[in-house]
Length: 281
Picture 1 (tube, rainbow, N blue to C red):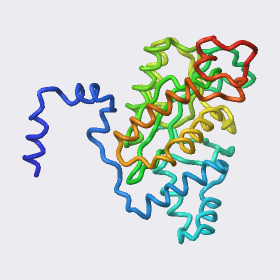
Picture 2: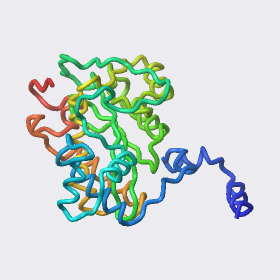
Picture 3: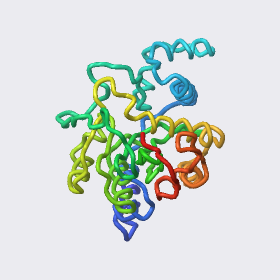
Picture 4: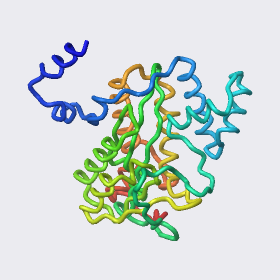
C-alpha cells in the first residue's frame, strides 16, 4: 500500500503545492483527513448546527436538552465533543471567548464605539461548519462590514490556517486593503501567518474582546442566510458540488439579495457606491 501511495505521489509532473493552487484548495486539504464520523454523529452534528443557528447563546447543556427533546439519546459530553469538532461555542462572556493557539498574540478590540460609514473601513473574517449529505466542510469568508459584501471565501475539510490565509490574500488582491480586519480569537486568526499578512499590508488588527460577541454579528447573520437559503435546501453530496453551489449563492447574495439594513440595496450596490443615503453602522 505504501509503495502504491508513493508511486501516486511521483506520477504527477506538477508539485502538490501547484496542483492545489490550480484547484483552488488549501494545501492541507490534500494531506490531512478529518476524524471519521458515523452516520449517527453526522446526523447529530446537523441537528446541533440547526439549534445553534436558532439559539446561538445555547451552550452544550441546553443543546443537549433540545436534542433529547427531539428524541436523541445523547449526553452532554458527546454534544460538547461534536461542538468542538464543529468549531461551535456559545458567545456568552467568559474569561476566554475562544481558543487562540499556544503562544499566539491576542490583539485589542478596535471596534468599540467605532462608527462604520464606508466600504473597506472594516472587514470581518469568520469560519463556520457546513453539513453535507455525507460529511462536512468548513467555510471561511471575508466580509466588508459596511456593505455586507462577501469579498472572498474558501472551503476546507480541516480547521487549518492555510484556507483562511488564502481567502484573505484573495480579498486584498482583488479589493485592496481595508483599514481594519476584525476576527475572533481562534487559532487560525491569531496565527503568525494570518496576522503577518495583515501587518505586511499595514492593516490594523482587531479581535473580539471579552463579552464582545456582537462584533461578529453580521457574519453570523451571513451564516444563517447561507445555510437556510442554500445549504440545508440542497444537501450537497460532494465538496465539488458544495463549492459550485456556494459560488452561485454568493453571486446571488452580493448582486441580487436586498438587505433591509441597507435600505433594500444589495451589497454590491453599497460596496461599489451605487447606493445613496447614510448607511453608517
